Image 1 (cartoon, rainbow, N blue to C red):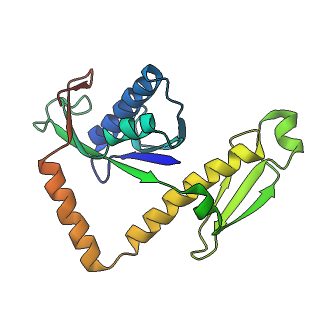
Image 2: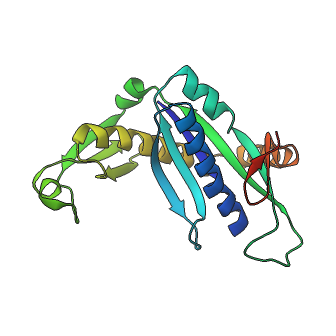
Length: 206
């Protein structure tokens, strides 16, 4: 399994808009390449059509690796702000991070528990134990997933979300030295984006 996370980081609303535009571009790229993908999670910003982050799942394949490799690293969107028309700044940074997950190996460290799905969804949802709670034993982190109708599909979603959550937890609890090193790395990236997009149409320059 390959996970691609697109994030605005601590950037303003314009960076969140860039994430949403990037997600649309990735979806179009996948459809053109006939590559299956699944949007696992989007974190909405305070404005419609803007995302703080998006997590996309791919099956492990050479095509998937080629696609996600184009979205790894710091990226730049050059555009006049549509939210603040008189704002002088036109450079909006966002980033992509790729995780390759060995599902079978990671699975060994997780306890799965089936449970009744909640909320609206019709008779099927309310009468089957299709929801899954996944707990990472060592850290105690857990997620609950019930988006899909089948338990198997929810299990795969849970693995992806739990891996992302564990990775974020490890970054947050890293030592001050590690955080300083990462901050320096990010600042260097911001000065040398791997891809640059321009204008409202989000046209790629490189």
